[in-house]
Image (tube, rainbow, N blue to C red; front, top):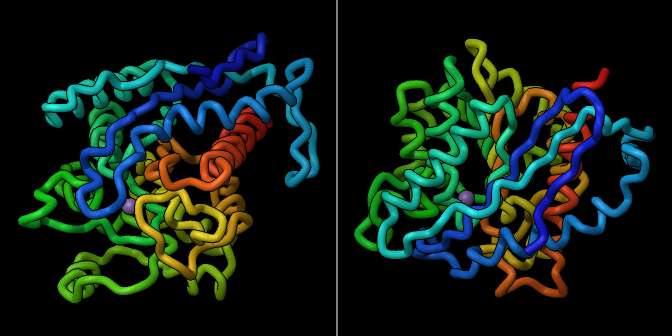
Length: 306
Ligand SMILES: [Mn+2]
């Protein structure tokens, strides 16, 4: 398996640690197969890694050549999966992600279904030494408390569980890209908790830049460390067919790219979930994830170097 690795060779200013989390037992309603996500995303990253020359890369969208000499991008491999034991597997993930944060690195967790965000948020909450805010780019709410089918730790509950952490507050949760139809009881829950929500049409109406700026303000309140989670189904299925569930009317590539570029300077931990190669077409979704990962990494390097 290809690791996502690069060492700029200069004095390190930006550290990222890639952690694969090939877990899809949380896909109890959506389509399973996201366990193959980390491998497919790593593979797709080769194209951009190959374009680095002499510690520099041309960022065409940013209109600049970025100096990568201060970048240390390491790949810690995959979380060892105990298929019979979610709690043990999540503990291992928490330990790996916490280690990355302690090393002064920004963890990039590659899912896996969206349940994988919980150990990441827990690790950041434990290590950050300050409050945590969450920016969730997603078609769905993932606020299910409990369900007879899905239980309490599925791909539909990780944000609800994260809100129970002492360091996390619904006032610092921002959900972007929501659409379609959902259970009515969560409308009252989201409103009463003061969760900030931008639907996909909100993003089209307000613009990605304004939404990203407001998200940073809300999630970053109280000096919070910001966890950014990207469910690939936030993007429209026409560009991301390899997802857990297809929810039409989604965000555009440019809008998500713009948002990640604006969030990058402030992100303390990042994950990409629900990339599902089993349902992908021509590797589109994995390649999209790799592009968005590079948007975030390269923009952060440029910002740290400035
Ligand atoms: Mn989700």
